[in-house]
Image 1: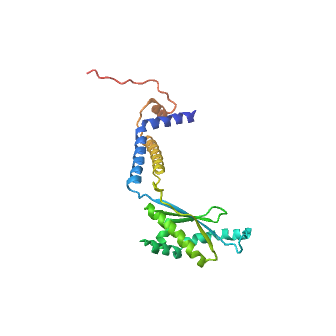
Image 2: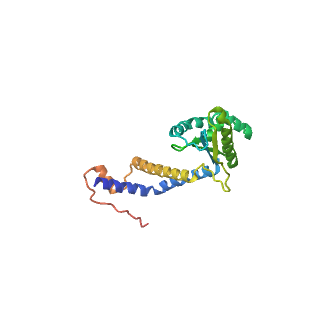
Image 3: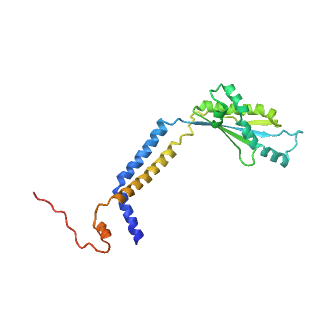
Length: 229
């Protein structure tokens, strides 16, 4: 019974402060939309895939499970090499980028699926065309330099990065950011409503009087007196 009463009280509190709650949601959601569209810089992503394995010593020879396992164990090494200054410094020189290997590393992510010899290189940049150029150049430089760095002589670029006709930025996620901000506004609005009710000690109804007096019931009410003058 007490839970039901408390729930009804909570609903009444929300109803009394519904405009405050809606205002907080609109303010936070609107501010996030404004920042996402007019302040944050759009970031584009380009992706290329590279296959790395060993050549067969004889034509028609099949790779053994040990050879495949050895190639898979080297995947983490390839990930490090791709983002190393040895590769990125040449990418910077070739594209004449105003950057450093350290800064370029922050734009590049390398991953591979489980039990896969395919490396996926993703590049993020403010310019969609530049992201494509960097991704493809990284793959090409890697393909050229790795044979001299490691005993790997069979590198193939499976798919080159391409510039789409209607490239869309991957960051910021305007819809997600707005949704999160609106929920935060909702929670803050509810919190403020509860805080206001907690510190508001004014008597507003007979129920408030009963709570103050304890078990003494209210036996009468004084109706509003209208001054006819």
